Amino acid sequence: MTISVEAIFALVFLFVILLIFLEVVHRTLAALIGAFLAAYFGIVYRVFGYEEMLTFIDFRLLIFVVGIYIIVEVMDRAGVFHFLALSILNMVGANPKRLMIIFPLITILISALLSNIAVMMIVGALTMAVAKRIKLDPLPYLISESIAANVGGLMLIISSIPTMLVGMEAGFTFLGFLLISVPTTLFLSLVTVLICLSIFRVESGEFKELHFNPWSAVKDRGVFMRSIAIFVLTLILFMFCDRLGLGMEAVAIGSAVILLVLTNVDIEDILGHLDWPTVFFFSGFFILVGGLEESGLLRLISMHILQFTGGNPALLTLTILWVGAILSGAVDNIPITLTLIPIIKGLIPQVSVNPMVIWWSLLIGVTVGGNFTPISSPPGLVTMSILDREGVSGYFYKFLKMNFIITIAQLLAATIYTYALLIVIG
Amino acid sequence: MAEMEEAAKSGSLSQELRKRLPSMINNVIKFAVLMIIIRFVAPSIIPSNTELIPNILGMNTVLNALSFLVIIYYGYYILRDIRALTDRAVNLVVIRSGIVKEGSALRRAAMDIVWTIGIILAYAAVMPLVKGAIKISWVEIAVALSFLLLIAIFLYDCVRMLSLIFGVGIKRLVNVIAGIVEKAEREVKEEGSGEGPTG
View: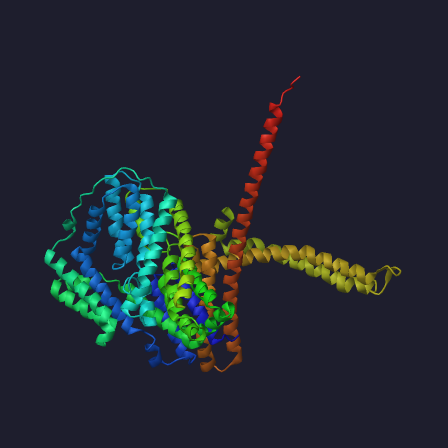
C-alpha cells in the first residue's frame, strides 16, 4: 500500500479541518499539529527542505497583525470605542425603528477598527442598556448587530484577519483597498439593514432622547486624546507608506511602539491580552498551507476549479464567493482564507479577469459566510452569551433561522454586486 | 435512540465471548458434519452422477441444493455470532481510543473518520522508517496488515453508527407518517359517528 504525497497532504489538511470542526482540540493546537505533520511528511518524503519550510511563514503578516492588535488594545483601554458608540446614540436619540438602523451601523463602524468580539461586547452591552431603558425586545437588535459585526470587517485592510491576509497577499495598498471596500461595505450594510427592518417588522414607536455620558467610558483624557492622535497618524501613514518605501507592517508595529511609549500603559498587561492563539494559529497554518502548495495539491485544485468553470470569469468569481461562504459557515474563516489564497494565486494568471474582482469575491464570501449560524462566527457566540447572561431563553431557533435567512439574502445581493464589479472593473 | 446508546456503551467482550463462542463452535461443527455428509458420505453411497428422475433430477443437483440450504441455515447463525463478537471487539477498541466519552452517534462516526485518517497518516509516517531500518518484507507486510486492521475497525464502527442514525431517522419518519394516518383515521371515525340519521 503506497500513498502519494498529494494524498498524504490532502489527508493532513482534512485531519486538521476535522479537528477544528469537531472541536476536538483548540484550533491553534490543530494548526500546530498540522504544521508538525506537514513538516514531517515534507522533509521525510523530500517535498521540501527545512530551510525552505521556514520561508512558508509570512513574518510580515505576523508583525502587521501584532502591531494592529497592540494599537486596538490600547485604544480600547482608552475608551475610544465606547465613547464613540455612546456619542452616536446621544446624537440620534431612540425609537425602535431608528435603533434597528443605528445599532447595526454603529457595529459596522466600530468593527472596522476593533475585533468583532470586542465590538459585540461593547455594542451588545449598550443594546441591553437601551432596551431596558425604553422597554424593547433586545433579540432582533442583537441578531442584526452580530451580522453587522462581520460586515464591518470588510471596511479597512486592518478591519479583520481575512482582510489583512488578502490585503497583504494580494499586495493591496491602503487606498487601493478603500476604493473597493467602501462601496462594498456600504452596499452590504444597506442590504443588511433593509433585510433586518423587513424581517423583524419593527414598529416606529415613540421617540425618546437618550442621555448617556460618553466621558464615563474614558478613564484618562490624556491617554484618550493621544491614542486617537496616533491612530489618525497611523491611518495617514498607511495611505502613504508605499510612497515612503515602507511596508504596512513597519507602520503598524512602529505606531504600536509610539503608542505604548506615549500612553505609558502597562506593556505586560497589554501584551498579555493580545490574541496570541491567533498569531500561533497563523504560524502553524502557514506551514501547513506551504506544504499543501509544495506537494502540488493546491495546483491540482486550481486546475479542477478552472476545468469546472471553463475559465468563465463570472462563473469563477461566483464559485469563489459561494464556496468561500459555505466553507466559512462550517469552519472558521481564517483557515479557509489561508487555504484559498494560494489556490486563487494559482488561478489568477490563467484567467482574463481583474485579480481584484477575484480577491474581493473571496473576501465577501468568507466574511458573509461566517453568519450562516450563530455558532459559526465569534459575534454570534458573544451575542448568545449576552442573552444567556440576561436570562433570555428559547432564542436559539429564532437566532438560527434569522441568521440563515439574512445570510442567504446577503449572499444573493453579494452575487449581484460581484457580477456588477466584474462588469465595471473586470 | 436506545440502540445508539446501547452501541455507545462499553459492553463486555468476555461476556459476549462466553455466550457466543459455544454456540458458534456448535454451529460450525454441525455445519462441517453436514457438509462432510453431503459432499463425501452421500456421493460414496449414491454416486453423484445418478439420475433420480431421468433427464429431470440428478443426484448432483440434489446434493448442491442441500449444500446451499445448509450454508444458508448455519451461515446465518454463524455470521450472527461473528457480527455480535465483532461489534463488541470494535466497541472495545473505539472506547479505548476515547471516542465514546461524549456526544451523539453522528459525532462518534465523525470521530471514527478522524481516527481512520490519523491511522493512515501514522502508517504513512512509519512505513519509510520501517522500510529503511528493517529490510525484511514480512515485517513490512505485518505492519501494513496491523494498520489495515485498525483502519477496518474504525471504518466498520463508522458505517455501523451511520446505519444506526439512518435507522433511527427512518423510524422517526415512519412514526410521523403513522401519526398523520392515525389522525386522519380518527377524524374520519369522528365524522362517521357524528352523522346521525336525518330522517
